Length: 508
Image (cartoon, rainbow, N blue to C red; front, side):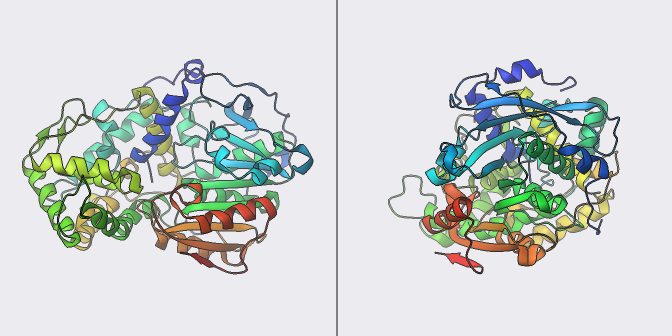
């Protein structure tokens, strides 16, 4: 991806391709003093030009959805910084007489876009929320059709099992460090100046420019997964600009580790979720049953992964073109994101036990993968400094493999950030309890990507500012997705009326 994704081509991208882009996020993604927004950012945000809305290009969007482009500084701290484009969309309130304001939809990632979410997930919102709010989507900086970046990674390095760093079968991280250096060098060579300015804090500053261009004194938001961290950072930097904030499937805000904590969370997330899969995969009458007893599923999976470590199965059309132990482990991790994926995982297990493979999964267009990977790399690596020493990762991986064999050390391993050539431009934002009490957290008990333990850390950090709804459900993304009716009602009531539970709540 040594050249930027052509923006005009991206704007002609079909809805199907945009859907594939969102699916690709799974593969890219997951200092101690708080900071404030620079004077230049806060002083100029409310002087933003209003949006010039036009019809959206492409197919598959609601005809009511409108699109516009906003220019923001590449470097919010530099008044003379070059300007970059942020693509924004909206569907106006369906009842102007009831309109309260704007609800910003913040996608996960890093590398996810909410540009088409007003037409998509936004239409799942109850009528009273669609009446009271304009629905706003955007493509974050770096992600087409906003001004885009890419790293020109080798095709093999776009494999999910490379973007998530699985150790060698013997636990060695030497190969991961080599991969990190190769990928980081490609990003430095091909990513341009913009890749150095990708960060969660800068995305939050861009959001405040969006708010100002909308003409809103305050803005509400629904952030999902990584979007919860974006929403929390925005609420920290611009607390007086927030209205009703929903953080759904919540990231750990640990200011010392940031993205390292998110990656590490997968080991507990798998432990929380795998028993649910095992119960499903051993249920009598299940056509994809992999074992007769729930207790047999885990040891069977571990044996199969170890066998594939020794004897990979060719897998034409896949990336990589073999089913090895780490590819199976990655498929397991992907399959635990939501119960609707369990059959795909089970079919892969059953085929591998017979020495065969199913058809290779359809891959997103390579330009999309390159763009998403570039945004993910820049954001994750710029938000916080990662250790550079292989010895640090080797020690952590050994401990993780012993305690959490299903994830084989991956969650504590070295991403390309271990070789990132640029130091962070600012300290990570420390999330605190300073600000209005207008945040609602919603979190499934069993979530492989953002486990309950990390959400509890966010709840602790926000203190009196937040109330948390814990949902007895399995899967990533809770509200209107993999949660339950009780949780959905609670969040919908808050968005529509501002009414939150008086205290933390459990939805069974």
